[in-house]
Amino acid sequence: MKRRHLMLGSLACAAPFVARAQPAWPAKPVRFIVPFAPGGGTDSVSRLICDQLSRTFGQSFVIDNKGGAGGNIGTTELARSAPDGYTLGLISVASHTLNPMLYTKLPYDPDRDLLAISRVALLANLLGVTKSMPVSNVAELIALCKKEPGKYSFASSGPGTSLHLSGELFKAMADVDIIHVPYKGAGAVYSDLISGTVHMMFANMPSMIGQVRGGKVKGLGVTSAERSKAAPEIPAIAETVPGYVATSWYGVAAPAGTPEPIVAKLEGAIAQALANPDIQKRWVDDLGLDLPPAGRAGFAEFLANDRKQWAPAVKISGVKLD
Image 1: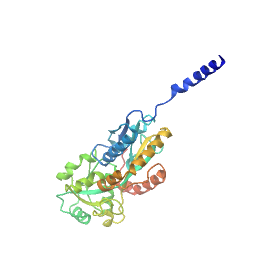
Image 2: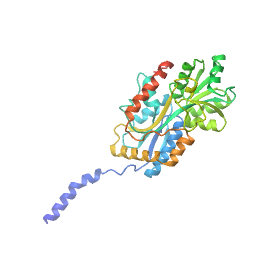
Image 3: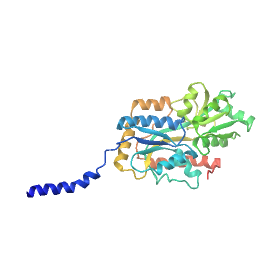
Image 4: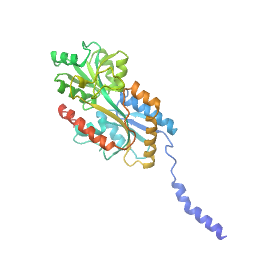
């Protein structure tokens, strides 16, 4: 009798703990916010990463494009989402480096409100010009723009983006007068660039390299200090404009406060994805990306250096987006 009472008492004590047990993550689809419009490099990379995560965890990782305000709309939504592992998102040079310098007050704090899980790509922008432009290299482009100042235009995915600031830095360092034409996203530019409505664009390598290889646009130069391993035939702009560098990056983040076991699972899964030979081939050969070290280690130091790199471009541009 006593034994039965002891067993019942033990079950009664255990019941509350059983009721509070949580299902293993992920038990349902995960939303992945991309804070830019579809069609650009951020979209391509996010879809490949989400496909790998879906395979690893056996749950859908669903892309949700929330473009606008240089990435602030989507990034703010990510920062304010429940930290339960069911909302993740893409972070980038825009969310963590440029926007904090361009806006006096942001609706999110990149260092406090977002938990960076891993960088997933390092990349240069690629300067592409419409095929009707009578130039075949950066030196000829500079000479043409100096001959007819104010005639030629460069497009971007919006004021203050890395695409825009790459152009502003080029204007200042090459001493040319070209007109900035902002669009709502990089994907929307290409029909106008191909037709010659706008003359050039500094675009993320993943979205521009296909246009160049497809013969629709001329690729004149990359914004990294040296030539890209993915397209070594295209010179670095720095070969003509010494000191010119404007590189970018993508990463994955969760809202601050997301449980450590979930973050650790994601960190490991992303590292596994980046080690996949198929992904490495897509990154380098198809998209023109470099592979960064995976995981959280070293992110703070990397970010500090990235902010130092971009500070001169922001200052030269004179852009303020308040």
